[in-house]
Every structure is written in structure tokens, then in C-alpha cells.
Length: 197
Image 1 (tube, rainbow, N blue to C red):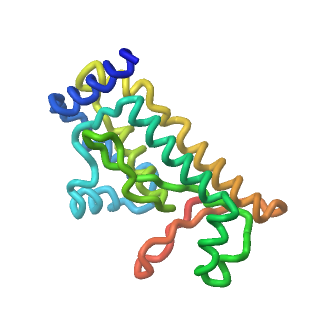
Image 2: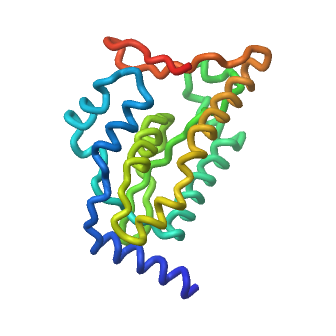
């Protein structure tokens, strides 16, 4: 128990006292440009949303991470119960009553951190935030030993293959005989879809 408490104190101290500027802005632009056919996307994002990418890290204690995983697991478990499904389907439109197979390739659980621990604020199916976080993680400069450790432990190379495995698994649960060839992320209707092959 003492070891966990020490880690809790360390993340609080770092969040309160570490003012490192670790974001490599040029690296961030390059990371975004490498992943999209839209050459101006990086500049537009950074110009129109200047606070979208934090310039310094937030240190997270293992206990807070475990609490977040517990909440996400509890939500997934509750959503799988027949009682929950019956209650939701009682007011859902008719199309929602059909099971097409996929669970949802990418669920997002957004938390705010505070003195009382992490608090769930939103559950959504928007994978965009995770991809933006990968861009951000790839554009970090290690300013202190804690940042170097975090950067070394990040599983950035595993993220994209894991996402593709999720998409392919969802696709195959609905269309097992048809190979997945293209994924299209729908943007604002005026701009049209952006295909990724």
C-alpha cells in the first residue's frame, strides 16, 4: 500500500510543479501531415484550435488508470446485461432492435482528474481523439527523466495495428466473406468524406 501511495504523491507533485514544455510543434505538424492527404489540416487544427494539444504532459498515477479501466469495464458489463438492453430498447427506434453484429469498433471514455480521483464525464464512439493523442505523443520532447520514462513506455507502435484489428474484427462479424478494403471517416457534409485505404 505504501508503494501505491508514493506513486500517487509523485504524480500530484509532478502535475503541480513540472512546467516543462515538451511539445515539439514542428514534430506535431509533421506527424499529422504524414497521416492525411490534406496538407493544410495540421495548420488549420493548430490555428483554429490553439488549445487542442497540450504543451505539457499530465502525469497519471497507476491507481487512477486502474480506476478508469474499472469504470469502463463496469459500463461494458452493464451494457451487456439483458435487463439493460431491454430498458434501452424499450424507447429506441425500430432499427436499433436489430443486431448487426459489430459491438462498436472504438469506444471513448473521457475522464476529468481531480483530488477525488478520475470522474467519468463522457462515453462516445468518436475515435478521433485517440488518433490526435497519438500525434501528440509522437511529438513529445523528453524534458525530464519522468517524461523520458513515459515516452519510452508509450506503446505508440502498437496503437494503429490494434485499431485496424478492431475495425477488421467488427467488419468480419458482419461480413465474414467480404474483405475490408477501405475505411471512410465522415467529416462535415460540406467537405465530404476522407477515405483511408
